[in-house]
Length: 369
Image (tube, rainbow, N blue to C red; front, side, top):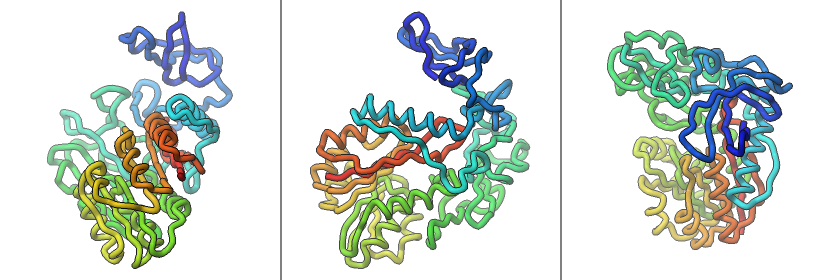
């Protein structure tokens, strides 16, 4: 929540709009704004509930589920408000809406993969909010049942962070550093009828229903026909390249670009039957110099966004249809603004609550020119 006191902005954790709270200032290093935390709720919001995560509030204060004290339906409204405000401020674009549920819409038990740091005693844990200190109680409300069972013991051997995954076959895989503790070092993930072998330490959507949800939306928005061409930029293991490649058919062309070599290898293996799909392991900025033209571009950049140079090259290439994805509201809004500067128009915009109990949100925009 954003509060004001004596002309100064204060960003307050554990508070909701309309509440009256007593705040402890946690960071006053900036002259124009401070950070604080609500230590007493004097007039609670009707949308405040008992925290759904046992380790994110109170004495534990893990940084995992920072908004588990908010009614889930109201939290989706708040996430829509945040994106709306960022779009207006940074993208100069007016939009109102709410975040949509994914899958069954469960607020707990949705996360299928976790990376945990390990303390000096060898115990894995979640970081406290803005701290290197770890909370070794692993009862986070996000994780699917069984994901972290028995992993709170220090005697796992090896060094390095702990990675745990439950894949789409229901198997658990656990790595400590590079050593396999349980299962294998790759997980079987499925989108539609296609399977991927994804390294346990590589990126895959954390929400169990996210990859399928996003893949269906990209296929719908792309409106590709046989013989057309598409770019899958920041394409990861090629989830979007798969549906794009199937849409353009054998006479079409899809190019997927990503910097991660493990993701590149997974994509090559999973999409080997789609000869119309080619993969490039390298920088999107560099690869775009030689990509030529495309009917559709799909971008799923990292948290910092795609930025002016990449969006400028898309516009210069004359790509008429763009699907842009963002996992950080401010960066997403800035990127939308850059498209608007280049003459694109927003045709559709949807938000997904892919990270329930947290402030994180996944945003999708369809832009045309």
